[in-house]
Image 1 (cartoon, rainbow, N blue to C red):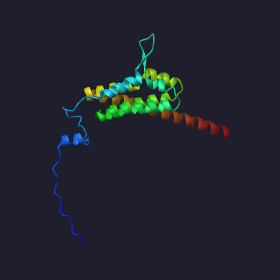
Image 2: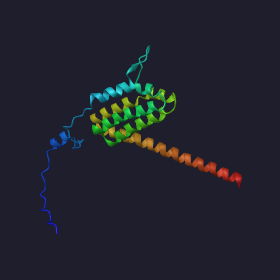
Image 3: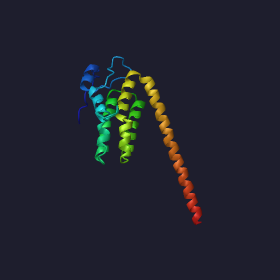
Length: 185
């Protein structure tokens, strides 16, 4: 017969600074002492992806995201992975959930339209989703409440648009199906 284990005493909570150094503690966005910064490398990545190449004779700039996107298959995946890095940096900076969802929407929109040959690459050159996501991170860190509200409203509008399109597609499908059935019977 095994002897019962002695009752364990509650351990004192470890210092928060120890947890943060270990990378375990989650930063509380209500903490006014939290650093409201994103690594300069994230800003540099967004610049390289969206604005690093000047177009001669104009004031416009394009980035490697659109150029790499010209390579079928590989380019779109590479742009998506690089864009995910910026979204993950936003998550690490503890941006609000609506802002994170909006950043993900920007990434998905750019990747989906980027699948269309040439037109998708032109969209990448104009839309600059990575720069938009970086701006969302900075706005959220500066003013979380208003950025979260704007992001939630935009996501609600996109969600209702998607629901409307799906509903209209279903109605049209049922109408066509009814016409086909009516034609045969």
